[in-house]
Image (cartoon, rainbow, N blue to C red):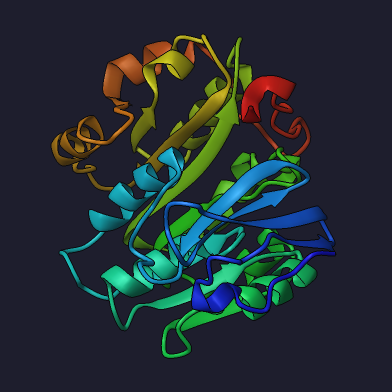
Length: 289
């Protein structure tokens, strides 16, 4: 294990922190361009990027897109009640705390050793109302009171795959139970050609939410490469025009699909049940090069 005791002070001599956690080999790699920023990798797969000096900074493309969804859940700056299924380095919980002070957040991160590592090496603001539970995501979600959350974010990966039991209609029943009537569900989905997993997840969400939007790189939607897509669901109309404007202005612009185009993209895929659920596909070796 390698570790620098100067990393929290942004020393130029900061070294990578390498430690075995429950989910595999965790690495905290210092960002050469930002003095107190770090990237978390688990078994070589990038999981999170955190800037301790600027928690509102989102480096990863998929996290920027989730940030846009977060920004539009409620009026700017208004506190929200959020549930994060999957914690990583708590990037998105830190973002909510920075952009919406006094928000109340529950983070469900099964890997207790990872939580301890992040708490020690990349501590978050102690005044932030962030509670972390080290249990399975579905078990933690079941403890959220009915109608409590303005926002439920699912960003759970075991290694680089989403566990099967977090891909089903039964799982989304629990999400809906925890959400307020106006609440928003947002999921980070990873897939590549032929996009069967992504299509199945859209069909599953469509069986539970009347309003859906998919945010993704056009190359991913065309099945040209493996990548991430953000699926947002709600009972009320989503702010599609503003979402489209925001992601079009990102360093890596994406598309927003909804309505008939999203239905057509789904291609007749069937909703996924617990009985038939499988984990998301493993990324190809080239995905993280």
